[in-house]
Image 1 (cartoon, rainbow, N blue to C red):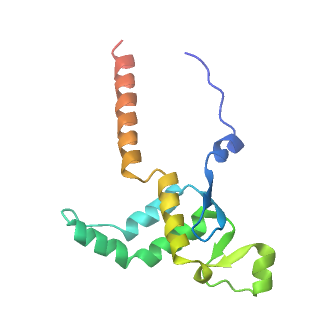
Image 2: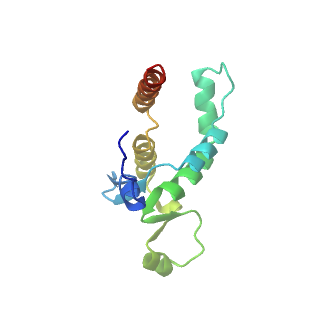
Length: 146
């Protein structure tokens, strides 16, 4: 069995950031959705088994504010986005903070889509994870049967 080098923290983090250009012309840095934030999202969009697509869409729409309040502050790295910041505009400028209320709606949708895609929450990414799990399961089985 070959010994592999352990991945350093900085090496692991470097692939967890991405630059996104927004319709407004602004450029933001995002990070992947954390496992804890993903768990929070699941609480918001929990859908009963057998729900129709329309029921699921209605559930997501009813929770969109909670979804944004979970994703935006946790996944937008730079500039910082704050909901109802308790500071003056001058302080916000010094600290590179943007009030969520000042964001363009199109930018918000692009940011949410970018975070989902970068975090691997697309249908294509789900299919890739399934293929990976099947491959690794087959490898483990073949090693134990030898």
